[in-house]
Length: 226
Length: 256
Image (cartoon, rainbow over all chains, first blue to last red; front, side):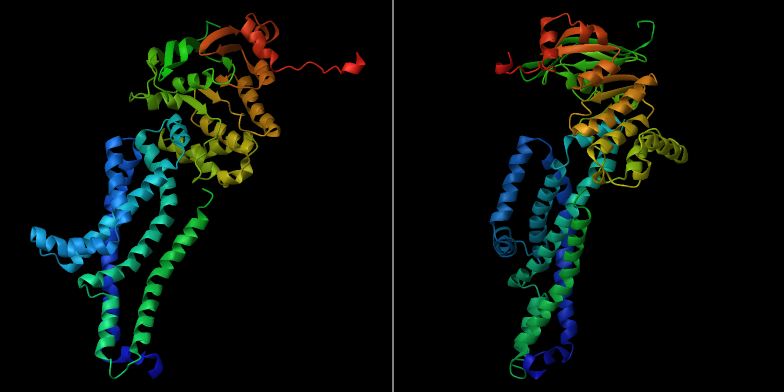
C-alpha cells in the first residue's frame, strides 16, 4: 500500500477533503448546466427562427465560445474584470459565469440543431388534425426534439464536469486542487502520494461521469429510430 | 350535382412563389358526397391546391371558403376548419414517438376533447377495418410504407372529417403496396365520403372519380366526369397527357 501512496487518503480527514473538492467541481458544473439549459433552450428556439440579425449575433457568440480556450475565458473574467471594472468576483462565481457562457452556447446550438431536424411535414400533419400551434409544439415537436437532444446534452454535461479541473487555475479549491494540496503536505512522509491521490481523483471523475455517459448511450440507442 | 350542398369553394385563387405563379385564377367547388380527382403533370400545382384548401399555404389573390367560412392559416378559426377537413400526406407523417393507437387517438382526445373510451373503441374499429388491428401497439418505424399510409388515413378518419384531402398518398410507395392503400380509398368512396384526391394512378382515378380536374401550368385545362375525361378528352393538352400513360406495342423491324 505504501508504494501506491494511497495511505495518505486515510490520514486525518484527507478523504473527506477530497470528496469535498469533488463536490465543488460538481456544484460548479451543475449550476452552470442549470443556467445553460434555462438560457440555452430559449436561445436555441430563437436561433431556429429565420431572423438574419439573430442568426448573425448568435453565430458570432458561438464562434467566440468555440475558438477561445475555456482557460482564457476564465482568466478574462476573473483577472481581467478586476483590473478593468474593479469587480471583485469570487473565483467560484467567475467559474460559474464562464461555464454558463460556454454551456449556453453549446446548448443553444444543440437545441437549434434538434429543432430544425424535425421535418416540416410533422408540423403540417399535426396542424391538419386541427391542433393549434401550442399543441403542435408541446405534443408533437417538443417530445421529438427532446429525444434528439437528451443524449447530446448529457454528453455536454460530462464535458463540463471534466473541464472544471481548469478552475483551479483561478484559485478555486476543487477536487484536483485538494489532491495537490494533500500531495504537497505529505511530500516527505509519503513521497508516492501523487500516484495514489491522482489515481483516486481519476476514479472520482470516472464515478461521476461514467453513469451519465452510460445513460446518454442508452437513450441514444433507445430512441435511435424515432 | 348542384343539388347537394357545397362544402369547399375555391374562388379565383392565385398563388405565387416569388415571381412564378403556381396557380393562376383557379376555381373549384366541392359538393357533399363528391369525389374530385385532380390530375396533371408534376409541378402543375395540384398538391398546392390541397394545401391551400387546408390553410397550409398563403395565397395572393382570391378566397377559399369552407361552408361559407374563410379558410386562412392565419385566422383563429382555422383549427376548427381543419378538424372538419382531413388531410393525408404523401410522406405519411405519423408521429414517430407515439404508437399506432396513440397516433390515431391523439387529435380526437386533444382537439375534440372526446371521451377516451369511445375514442379508443372507434380507433380500434378503424384499424381493424384497414387490417391493422395487431399493429396497434407498434411504433411507426416498425411498419411498411403501405401500412403507415393506412394508419395515416385512419388517423384522419378518427376526427370525423366532412371532407378528406389526399395528397399523392401512393407516390412514395412500392408498387405492390399501392393497391392496399387505394382499396381503402375506394371503400371510402363507396360510403359516399366527400374527397379530393391528387394522384398519378390513372386507372384508379378513372375508377373512383365523379369529376376529374386536369391541371396544367397552374390553369384548369379541362374538367369533366371520369369517362368524359379519360375516354374522350376534349383538349389537345389532355390527350397528350393521357397518352404518356399508354404505350404502343413495339413492332420489330424484321416482322414488318
